[in-house]
Length: 441
Image (tube, rainbow, N blue to C red; front, top):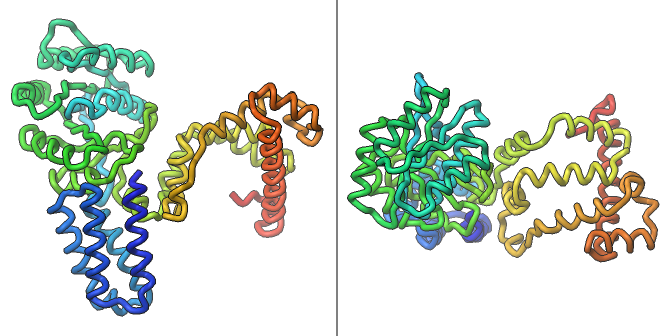
């Protein structure tokens, strides 16, 4: 996400870090370039202007000009201002003291609202909530069926009554939730291609009737200022509580994420970073600012790993590594764990420095994991546990069985040998340097 914005900002900061001495003039020149980059990323004009002014006021101070590392100081100021611009800290959902908590989704048609309802339901269920999905979009063809399909797929109940207005439907859904012990009601309201006053009036009526604990405005993160303009109008008429940015795994330029909080005054609460129902992240302004500036996001990466990696499997693997018994079966198991964390490109993008211009042409091949899995599955149990027995004829058989080439098989086996060597070195370091044979992970 934001690869183009990150690359351009890195280029600007690389120049300013290379300056022998910083002056007010070359700081202003650099910030002029930053302003241009922000406008190219479709950031609101007023927001970009105010952002640059704020950075400039701090950057030309004596503290920066006399600093030992003035270039790094400026990057730090930009980081702080980006974090401030996007909301400073994560904004949590507010739950009702008396269930059910009612969350109402609004937004333009095509913003990914219905899919987000499914993602939010899964997220809330992982936090111990019992969600009820409500199909209150009775206008868009197949909208009800789409939500029902999502509910069936995720095993969550979906409330709908034909020939019922969305306002009445909302009231009945809340009564149903109370009777059936659902702690959260998720209202999927009708979208619109543009601001439609008749349908907007209906949303206002739903709000006054069901009294939602929160209204979330769902915006397509790829539409930039169009999303911001729509948010302004929804905010004026509905006074929503938070923003959700969808499709942030695509080639989003960043304009919506960097503008919407400043324009509406409402926090971004979630970002959707993929098509799968678990591809939903709580929005952390400081982490996104770090990603935008090419510093990575180790905290989110660790959280992702904690959510997906089986602790018992990890402990068993550690024991095997200590005994130098790491096999291709273990390698395959770890591949499956990595796949659960999401696309490789996303994972790599969270590592510091991996968004830099030096890696802009890096092609991350998720299909490589599929090929490796096919190759290992084409081996016998003995071959997986003792790959040294795999001779030329066995390699041909494995390649044929996996639909790959002998070269692919050779490449995997060579990589595995290198991994084994690396594990031996790490294990040796753990015994010498940390005492008691403790594994240094």
